Figure (tube, rainbow, N blue to C red):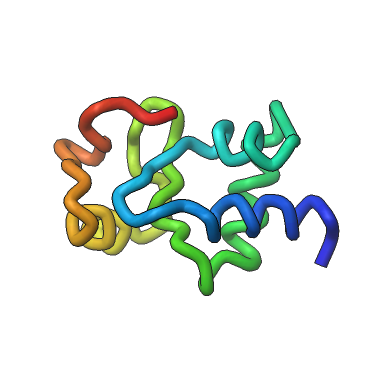
Length: 91
């Protein structure tokens, strides 16, 4: 696993229940500003054991290939999702 992947995985693993952030915020926290697409690539390839559902697009829209599953996970953590978007803003 690359250092980039390890940093991204560590940031996603640290997300707490109900905490929802954008791909770009994960990249920023990992010290990789501007690398939001890298976050998506790492989660797609190596994110099954992480709370991937807590990462969405900057506009709050759900991003997983299985959006219904992502929505179920988020709602189980008391996150409001309306019309495929997280309500309340996303860093």
